[in-house]
Every structure is written in structure tokens, then in C-alpha cells.
Length: 158
Picture 1 (cartoon, rainbow, N blue to C red):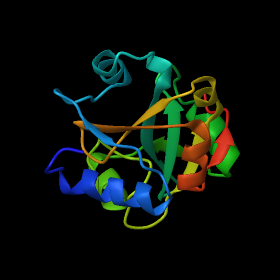
Picture 2 (picture 1 turned 120 degrees about the horizontal axis):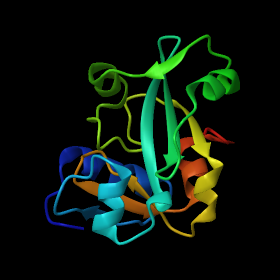
Picture 3 (picture 1 turned 180 degrees about the vertical axis):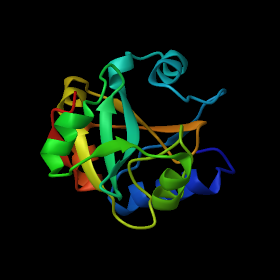
Picture 4 (picture 1 turned 60 degrees about the vertical axis):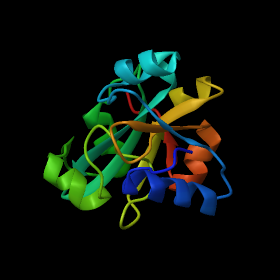
């Protein structure tokens, strides 16, 4: 791990360790606001990027961890979680519920647990990369670990 991580990334590293996961936080040279930019910097398939997307589901936060090769179907997700309406959250809503900025939202390390769906397409990849709380940071994990550390539900979301 680099000497000095952004506080959000350091917190994500602590949460990973609390789950018995020793994944190193990787600091990217450039920010990775999209799955394509993250995949290019990591030299992996776009589908191995776990996008952490926060949605507003009837005014409650909902985290959907989806494969970078997948688009989320909000009508399908609404039906899965029993919400009247699921829509993309505002940057303010995202930061309020995760403490992290869009483009760097990690699947963990939020002030309070966030209901989570984990895209089954991520299970196609041995290694999955997720944001680590800051747009320049990621960590390697697996589909099984994502389910475990988030308490998420496996789902087809696209």
C-alpha cells in the first residue's frame, strides 16, 4: 500500500481487513470515472470492473454493483427491491449516503449499511476490480467476496 492513501481509501482498506481480506488498494495514475477508463489502466476486461452505482429507490439509497459491460435496468431493479421508482442519485445524495464521491464509490466503507444488489455477471470473472472510495483508487476482489463484504443480494440487474 502507498505510504499515504486518501482517507476514504484508507478506511476502505481497514474495512476490507476487518473482513479478513488483505487486498491492496491500488492508486491509479488517472481518475477512473468509467469502467472503460478503469479497465484500460488495469489492463483487464471492462466486464471485470464492478461499477458501484448508487440509486435513489423511493428516497432510500440502493447500491447496485454491476459489471462494467452491463447497463442497469432501473425498472427491473425496482421490481427486484419492491420500490415504486428507482432513479440515478444526485451527487449530493451519493455523498450523503456513502461519504464518497461519484467515480470513486466503494462497495463498502459507508457511514451506514446500504442495501446492495450484486450483478451475477461479475461472477464470470476470477478477479473483479472495485473502487476504493476515491476516483484514483481500486482494489481487487472476487464476486463471492463482494457478496460477503456488502451483505448484498445476487441479482441480474441489466
